[in-house]
Length: 281
Length: 228
Image (tube, rainbow over all chains, first blue to last red):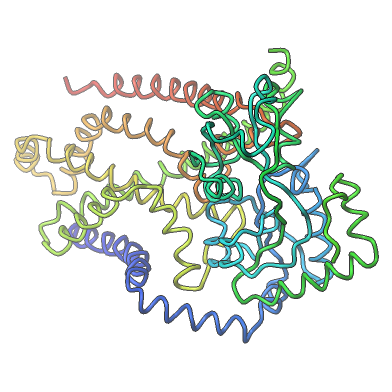
């Protein structure tokens, strides 16, 4: 009798285990999974992502805490230029907007796995991003800047002077790409903030992060008071990313165009001090 | 230093929110993994070969792969491969997926500790029970299990303390536990940006909590000292 109970219990556990075992099987079998993927991709363009989002009534926006784009000031509500625009976009579609903080490294997995519907967080339109996501038109300008300790900043005001420095930059970021283009030594780190810590700790001579962030993070009143930013490396643009093949990108482009035309986009930008960087739609 | 004192109340309240997530994951994992581990241990010790091979296979898979990969697979695979994001994108879904991964992972480690504990009870104890006319289930619950519990407290304490720290791995699927909360201040959160110290300060929470656990587990070990 006891043996049977043990056996039954173990089988129940076994069933729940095989459930995820099955998932990894189909993952290793690339043929099946890629077949399934093509089906779903064509399915997505047939059914339309706009309808999918309207059907469930919520647009799930993947973000990170990034002032002035998406951040919290008091209480629980997400504000910022991107957050406010996302709310307005959700309103135009007639759906609720839910903000979810994600791990930036996993943004494409989050999108494809449908745990989020878009990435809207001051995302630089790099080749990696545009080839793996359906992107909206660029809506904001940004630049990558070099961060060095303030006491040596005078020596590093142009790109030629940077050749003997060792750099730190966020893995997969536009900053890392800019350093690689200049064929300089670069240590990839997990976040832009980690790159700053490398410079402060002296483990790297300089870091490359984006200018909006540099303005908020270094200098007086931060833990990086002894750091400063010098030259800009390349200009870049921000866009919003959707699932590959999604028609939400077009819907957002239309929304950007109309809100730029009626001035509500600039009004929102002025509220967060980013009006100088906005791109005409 | 003055700046840190100014930031302290904001940082502490944010870290507290993160630490509550850490604690929730810790307790849910323990509650789920204690019984599941026992079931897997029975499976591994079963005389029914296919069952014991299967249990050992599962333990091999779970102990043989990093918990971080298991978290990624369990959270993202349903959406990526089966096209059905069963966990959903919200915080509740991430917590469920993390709990599932942690329970499965820790149950496998616990099962081996249980097995060692049960098999370490001398056969003489079971024979004595038989002589006294006890049934097999009486022998298990009144003799073997009691002595097993006493034997496994030190190795289990080890795993439990490791679990407190392992919960930080759940940040890979964006579960906002205490390390996540601490790291947020580096980039900017709650109006403080570029602050490094909150990340290091999270260690204090782990230390204090593990200190309390160590005391409690030590007391439990002394209480169970009745067989000698």
